[in-house]
Length: 342
Image (cartoon, rainbow, N blue to C red):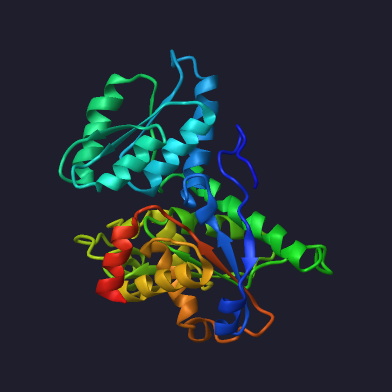
């Protein structure tokens, strides 16, 4: 198994060709297994890179008197990524969550070694308390953004070079232009837009990139789709989707810019029921459990929407599904989702 390093508190994840998905879609489908990251989600890359860069800046600064202490207001995957990366690199972290945060997520954070503080009824109140009370009293405190920061995007972008190298190995080496093998299509879920932005950044850095991107959201957490339809950034009145990890009421501006200007991007929305059915089928067929946010991406392949979204795909086309992972579930929730949606 690949290991983390002081410079990189995330791992190179496997890229596996899936016979079942390939049969359904009529092309070669590969699973990029980000659910195997130390924090169980892709956020190990972006938030891990942010923390690495913050440590570098702190070591060069004359203002700081001690080691950086990392603060984040997320009881979900971003919080777990922050804690996991901080621990890997030998630094302390504090997570502030609202009282509405599920107890099983609080326990997961504590098991990883976080100092967990509950405050306020919503994320807004928890974040406000973190910024105004905790950070103001800690000269070594560093605020960790869950998705909207260039260092987070750069961390997520590392996935692109990784799968291109892996595809090249699978295909037997560089092509006749001495270039790595590109994916024809990449499918990823979108919440705040950090993953999507990072992947678009990585594709921009690929010479002669022809890769198309399908950005998937669930209805009720579809801030990117609504923004594209409106031609401007839209703030949702609230999150009504079961996929709470996609629950950003406004996608980051850079994600909107990428999606709005690029003809290679297709924004798609699926229903909660589709996402849950997909994650249950994935658990049954692939033996891996992910959350509904990830199920949204899987639904595009399971329901073979690819042929409508990208009509010119053939049996040799290469499609990468980003299995983004996530920890916002337990067995009780799985049973509840199965009863409600399946």
